[in-house]
Length: 319
Image 1 (cartoon, rainbow, N blue to C red):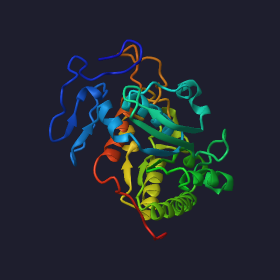
Image 2: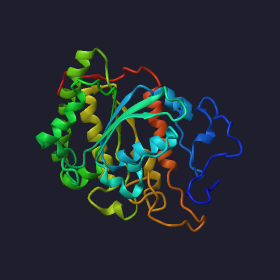
Image 3: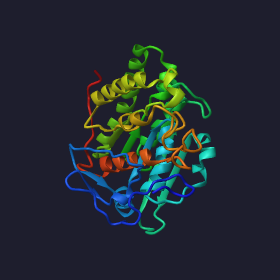
């Protein structure tokens, strides 16, 4: 069903209690959004989280997000779609790009004040606040590294979940695969040396999640961060970090966004969590904005909220 103004499809709005078919998934289908597209994972049962279940899982956690503007959109849409949280003033799409650092001591559940989640987001496209197109080489800046490290010194608690992505800025910055591979090695070593001492000191492992880079859409398919290049860069990033972080989980944003990257119908070229580049579809007045991102939010919740909460371990090898 198409929303009248907000460009959203709400699945089965007249059947809010409709359950997903076992064993492919569980939960209420109405909590997803789609214009007919179906994401199928036949390797395991996929959970569709209610807002209450999402809060139950994330409450008392500290999520540390290190990534580009897609990660910032991801945080915004986790709040809106996953937690039904009133969007903060800094979450306005028109000013979204201006927020390169988000420090929120606590997002408190407005319906249950005893539930809260802490979130830190730091932009990794450049070490300068308004810089761009540097990617993983942002870590060459000493002040920037120190800004990241301070969150993991344990003086005021520490993040228990580390979610990161990189790619679109790297695709423009690194024209050769070899240079990017070296940057991945440096980045993975940096985070291993940041996280490993903390886990040894507190005796608790930190969950590590990689959110792969989206597939650039429309005319953006022809720039230096083209989908073919980003698919290879995703593989290099995944391999480099898996050597340092055993059990690292993956939210495959590239796989989910690739079917929709041929035009601007579902994105603005580089973001699938924002209004698309077109103003209307020929078959509907309003294009659908967010159904890809809604699925990615549920994928993240499945990663964080299912299985062993201490799944990620830090390898002592740097090879």
